[in-house]
Image 1 (tube, helix red, strand yellow):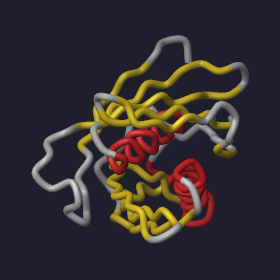
Image 2 (image 1 turned 180 degrees about the vertical axis):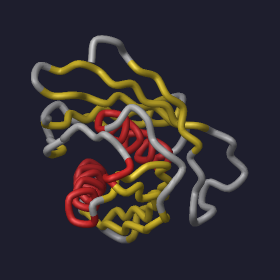
Image 3 (image 1 turned 45 degrees about the vertical axis):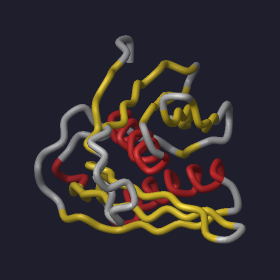
Length: 160
């Protein structure tokens, strides 16, 4: 990946928690030694989660057909960083177990007591319909998730 890649994500919120917002999350793929990193920004937590997942998709595939059925992912964790890690790990699990490339990510994140939760959906494109590169795993290496004056930013490194 010699060129940096910017893409914009339509971050619909399945729960309506961010209703009324026309905000879009953005991600950028960055070279990272033998790995690949995704830097993302968005107005809300759900949008930044979805933008990082779109970056994961872009790291695996350059072109995505309009096929596939939507599926839902629900994850809970004790911290936001753990939630982002587990959510992205679930996307990789869906690829490996169901044989689909998760695309067109949508996510809603909220706090529930002492835990954080994400409910997300993606369209599962059959791997047989795409030429996909292998991303082995999400890592905690250099992971950053922070609220800014403009919304949220995330930085995640994936093992390739």
